[in-house]
Image (cartoon, rainbow, N blue to C red):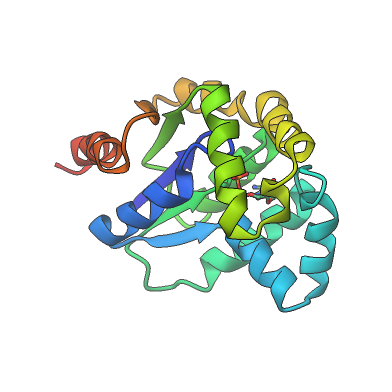
Length: 192
Ligand code: ADP
């Protein structure tokens, strides 16, 4: 099984690249942000809870996020592999994911980290906010808080995966196809 974590700050292009990787390598795409937004739309309890954090640009608590992710993985019995997009975002989530996969005799194959400058991130997110309708993409102070959450809670995961020898950093500042080519190169090295 090919299990990929796509990693990077908000606005780095994780979702865009994940969709392309899913198509190329026939993986199941699990985006925690998308799953939360679907729950908000359909008015579930989980959605209500998640919304109260997302609207402020805070991370949703680990316990709920981990439980949700695990249940989504368990729904996919025929998957050839997964791409985890927006998960893990904390050390506790990364540890829980390793343990959960281990229980299924699986593991993360590699973590692709998209590197983009902060100014470029804010510019992209505000641009996306204009037509995505995402409230958390439209307010500069919320965007700043998301970047802050990333810097304090998520960025340390680079070391976590580096220590496991799984981190592959890729420049995320060019055009979509160029970035995709570079990501694919890293994936191909693992499967050839
Ligand atoms: P982006 O990567 O642009 O921030 P996402 O759609 O991945 O967008 O995430 C949107 C929001 O959903 C986050 O700001 C956070 O509130 C919540 N969220 C998504 N994934 C997680 C996670 N793994 N842990 C906690 N909160 C999460």
